[in-house]
Length: 199
Image (cartoon, rainbow, N blue to C red):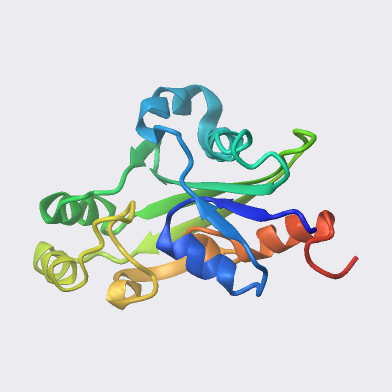
């Protein structure tokens, strides 16, 4: 019997992305309070903090899936020089967040970890995106939030809908990294352990 691939996430965005690879997998909720770890960001930096959270998510499922390959991922949104943006959760906070990023560059950093639950060995990857917002006004931000309700997205936008109109430039190796699970990096990790074909 083959070992299961377990996605350590209940995110509908990550579930949909991983489904594109035509691999069977389970999705399970990691037991990690991400906001409680925010204090580590200053010491770890963007890459280190994203990987720390991805490791924590994967390891939180190791006991319940001892024979699995556990895929953990975490994306952080950083407004230079070093402000972490979180999911706004309310329309008012989403509009305020959009006004903060208007005319600025937002950095998205996603840490990805593939944990062999049997041995504890991990493989990891980092995906970085630099998103340049054009300058827009409050009325446009309010209209976008009212129409699309991006309340579960740090930065208060979705690249998959009319949120694309808020941008001037997108810089990154893999657009799926903007959505939350960089599939090119994931494929490299899965290929490295034989879960996908190829050298």
